[in-house]
Each structure stands twice: as C-alpha cells, then as structure tokens.
Length: 176
Image 1 (cartoon, helix red, strand yellow):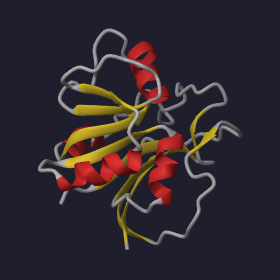
Image 2 (cartoon, rainbow, N blue to C red):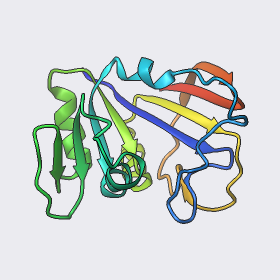
Image 3 (cartoon, helix red, strand yellow):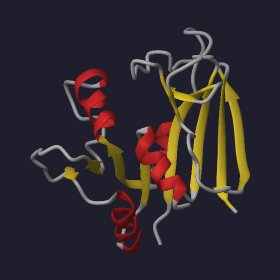
Image 4 (cartoon, rainbow, N blue to C red):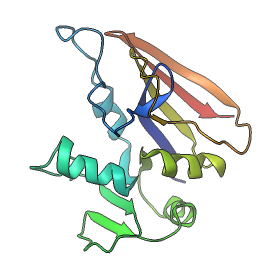
C-alpha cells in the first residue's frame, strides 16, 4: 500500500509561510554553505503530489513561473475553482480525504502532501500521514501560517532520523 508523506519546511516557531503567504525566508543561516539535497532523495519514492490551490498558485506564478517543477509527478490540486486539468496536473473538487484513501489503494509509489496548511491539517486530523519529513529553518517569523493548527486528536510519532546542515534540521517521523 502506498504511504502518505508530508515533506515540508517550517520556521523554528512553527510557520510554513509568513503573514503574506511568502516563503522567501526558506534558507539556511549562511548563503555560502552547501546544503544537502534531501529533496532528490525523498522524491525517488514519490509519484503523486497533493496540494491546495494557494500552494499550486504560488509555485506556478511566483516560485517557478516558467516551468512546472513537478513535471515528473501526477499532481492533484484541491480547489473549488474551475480550471482545466492536464495529464500531469489534475484540478479537483473531490474531498481530499476520500481522494487520498482512493489513491492509497491504487498501484504506485508514495504520495507527497506538499501543502498548504489547510490541506495538511485536514489530513492530519484524519491521521492519514504515515511519514513526516519536516525541515526546521533557523528563523523566527513571529506570525504567519502555522503548520500545526487546530488539531483534533493526539498523534504519537516515532523519530526515525535527524540531520543538521547550514543551521537547518531535518526531522523524519513515522506514525506509531
């Protein structure tokens, strides 16, 4: 069965975006320091991505407007907006919990929950995330969009792995 993986970065005080939804602060403590490429290793086991409209829109218009950076994956964008789907980008109004349960039963690699916060929280509240890959960025934002907000139940995790580089810390947890 396919696993559901959250792979995301957050500030030390728990935000995934600043108050304006920006992510320009997503960097280590020094620009001259080499970063470890954890993304390339992570996506080896991924073939499907789920994201909300705001995440999709930010990637497509701000972070990578000239090319779709997730072209090697099938991406589902959860939205109520009418938008034309393509072979690789599928816009859907389907309930994300039902969609995840359906995708989990299909053949394929793991499923990456890419963002945003509302989508992530819905999936966490249903305890559907199998693996949590969280990078802590050495920044205190003070306000913004929280990763973990309004949880409905306690979820116990087991720490599998940590690594630190350029002031950032990767934490990998599995649901117990």
